[in-house]
Length: 435
Ligand code: C2E
Ligand code: SIN
Ligand code: SIN
Ligand code: FE
Ligand code: FE
Image (tube, rainbow, N blue to C red; front, side, top):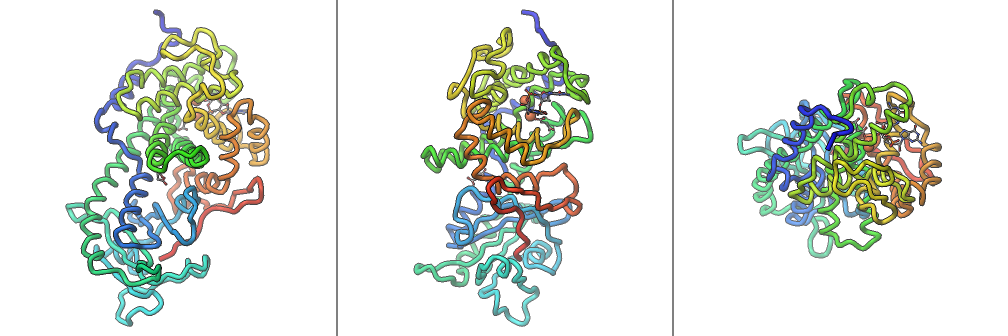
């Protein structure tokens, strides 16, 4: 059968091959899910109330993940998207531990020995009302002794819930665990880099664009799913597993744009009807890459690629457009409502929100008020109303994600802006460093 829109074969083959780096992919775990798992495990073993992971990037310690049972008990929270970095030197506890490659245990942050090599910074406690007492900070070292990050756990609890010093057992176990963790962390970092490179080939043929959009759509989708799944009573283990897969699969939603020519993709103006008809094929091109799904991730990525422009009211594509069934088995059937896989219903909203709030070659960014108004108007039309409700209910998290993944400026130069005008007067992202 004739290909109605021939794609550049070479590109597509390279992408297909990368996608099939087979058992790599079936084992694939996204970085946030790995960090979440590591913190869960470390906090359980040490009975710690809170914990933070920093990862070394470009000579600095970047805040990368956090748990705090006392301050934020809700599962979907903006704090994990905090965006700041610490120097690797003796001006902070984490900087000291990374710089010296040694564990540091503090029994009481407010009563430290006078010969302590580093001081506790109470700024975080002052701002949040949290009371830090015991702190255990360990370097995350690879088997080659390279420091790739730092894990800090705070406030070990005894059986009554009182804060106590960390045990000797914890101090012995954690460094070993951290080395095991370093393998998973390095692998997850490579996975994310692989995905970003793939999307770069597919779409970022314009050097002024970056992978930030891809990471935002992945993160928005993961967090919307988290709340949606909680509301639907999805068990915690399934929820976390699917959340991880959705984050990755949503990053790949537009991988089919690899088949669209630069002339159309980069057109700095409105597309003609004919150009838009071609553009619609990015959905089936994307799905085709995952046709022989061998893993859950492949299957989910295929669903999202194919269905992220379907609409709740049945008027999206490729479903309601004739002659679009050439490349993908399930394309070309009208789809509406819950026929559309949930991951695609979620990614549809995440993608449109991000497109409207970003500059595109064909449009300026829209103000939040206008975006929110359109999304509310389209609830029950373009979008699944339950998904819209979840999105609006985590506006603070959405804002934190947007502030974190900006267009890849070095972190120092990123405006840490307070740009969250909440639809219902909710709070804003980004908290300051703790220690
Ligand atoms: P994209 O830029 O990632 O946009 C994703 C979706 O966001 C669009 O899907 C659309 O539903 C929504 N969206 C983006 N910009 C606007 C807007 O200005 N107004 C409204 N109401 N919605 C908007 P859609 O329309 O199916 O487009 C799919 C892709 O096709 C877009 O992805 C973009 O790559 C391309 N595209 C669409 N329209 C144009 C255009 O006028 N010029 C160019 N150069 N590309 C376009
Ligand atoms: C979580 O459920 O918070 C961990 C999974 C993730 O963040 O991707
Ligand atoms: C990007 O990485 O900028 C492209 C993804 C998209 O436009 O949806
Ligand atoms: Fe798309
Ligand atoms: Fe997109």
